[in-house]
Length: 225
Image (tube, rainbow, N blue to C red; front, side, top):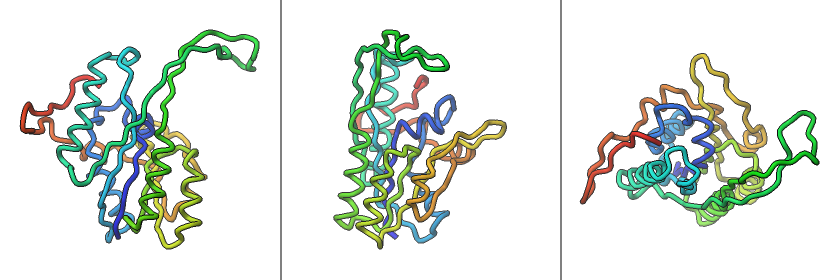
């Protein structure tokens, strides 16, 4: 079964990777393995990773954060040139007046703050999934996200292409002693199968090599992220 995997990069990061040592993640190994567990006939033909470059001036480690992210994307494409496609959106930073955090909310009590928004990722995922299915590039489309904004995407695909298998992997870290956040039931209801978590041992065993050779300088696993 020809399978394409569509990954919401920041949804994966905040759901399963943040504050862990597993950010140097081999997404092909991890998600191919999960798909194979669901269906042993699964053949992953493409992995599409949707994200946006970090804003260095707002990142914890500044330019190092930008370089680490860029090195990660290069590493994926170097190891899997025929499988991995990194599709970029962008971030906008705007200033505005927003209600101060308090309960109950007081709309009149506002503070001035910076607003960071990721742009184009949701639309890029939706269009890429629909166009790939329409072109007959896969028999199964697997979404890695916990974002209910993709509900219309899955609904449209299920209605227009009933022969296609749709899977969803919810990027929630399952680790001993840690609670697991709720997941989108809307996505699950529109999928033929759903994996509701990613286990910590799966992340640990699916890491990229610390050094990846290139024709020039090798790509090294970042110290900071």
